[in-house]
Length: 254
Image (tube, rainbow, N blue to C red; front, side):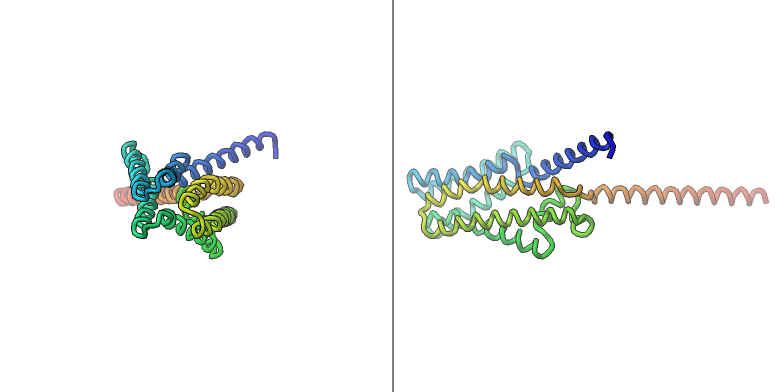
């Protein structure tokens, strides 16, 4: 390696890290997505801790979730993270209202966390790590990492195991609390466990992917193939035109 090569490689590494950070920010919603995830549950447990009113707590949580969606719509921003929050809160409200048990407000989200944690582990054991399925389209590589980029497949497997382990560890704390703690205790623990495990999982994903080979941009490949095909057809057409023109000259000379 010469002294001129190292800056180039460092620049490429910095670019790869920047792309990875941007992709993770887009996929997981960034700071705003975290706020939208935490706020409804925080509002529910705060109101319930103060007055033990299930209906008021549930309505307030659902109302703030809908408000977050409206704000995104007004700002013409993506609503996928806000909508997922609305659905989660709505299921929680339905569970709590139907059973009359305020703790059931948290049950759908806990079951989702458990299922997602198992999905990360099971898909990785099956050779199709879930993190690759989530981030592949974001990196414009789709499923090319499965057969053409083993280094990235390994990184996605590590990231998926990390997410699965963190989510299952979170469930190991929450489900016992669901059975023996009261609603306020469960709610505050759940709120406290929203952001730190998430940030740890995102950071580990960034570490694994930043060290992995660059993604294969399959969209750029398809565009290049289409352009090459168009150029080939244009060359063939020009060649046929030259041949026909030459044949015409021969016939006139004859």
